[in-house]
Amino acid sequence: MAKSSMISNGAVANEPSFLASLIIHWRAYYELTKPRVIMLLLLTAIVGMCLSTQGIPDVSRMIWGSLGIGLLSSAGAVFNHCIDRNLDIKMARTHRRPLPTGKVTLLQAVSFGVLISLIGMIVLWWLVNPLTAVLTFISMLGYAVVYTMWLKRATPQNIVIGGIAGAAPPLLGWTAITGTIDGNALLLVMIIFTWTPPHFWALAVDRVEDYRKTGLPMLPVTHGIEFTKTMILLYTVLLMAVGLLPYLTGMSGLIYFIGSTVINFGFFYVAWQLKFAPEKRSPMAVFKYSITHLMLLFVILLLDHYLI
Image (tube, rainbow, N blue to C red; front, top):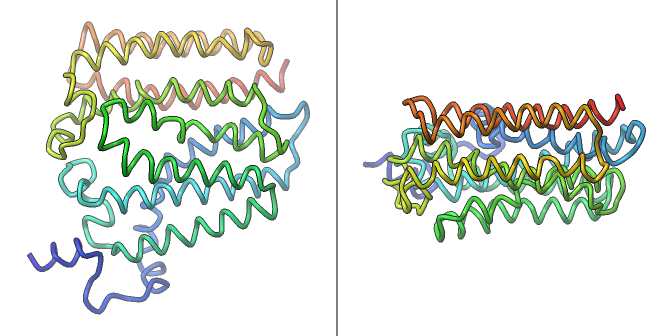
């Protein structure tokens, strides 16, 4: 009871200073940033940088842009941990995170999030450009505040509406190099925006009982698993259509057309299996494939850009 009370209040008696805690429990702070998610976001941002110019982008802007975008995205993940700490305790997938286990206190986590967000803003504002700094900050607030604090708790369409924040990195990478917002960059945003619901809903189907415990209005909880499977399948069809836009607009060529068609059909296939021939592992198969799908799609975009 005492431990639970200390964790819920975000403080522990005789706790080390923030800097001492950062050194001692650096792995826990690293976990707060959701590093695997951030690496995927950075991949899409870097591809956005490369696609924004015919040649090789300015290396300095690429480095500082990636650092700033990564830091602010990581800060959003930290604040997400802070806001969801009481929900995370209830879920098997998240109960061992740093805040529920008490490895990091709430005050320490907030301090860490503020610190890296400030560094990220300084880097982007002074070493990249103000437009990228502002857009990245808005994206971070969209995920940490609008999605986590409000949408996640308000509507089963939370991930659809809130997905725009997570879809922003290609645009941020583009503006980091050019300083302007371009229609082609928005096409990349549209791809990730369409990809996000089937990606997340597959995980929600697999962990539906966890979400039921939290009381969050996730789609499988409010509308049922079968309805969610149908929506996953329909979104993969929509993704196949949206995925053609870079080719149809002339942004990319034949390599992208063939590659994206193959992997988009693969996404549709695993979603079809989830709906019509499900096995116990089917939801996680869709979830894992979706991650591989997004990585490959952006790598193919990059190859197409430089090989054709």
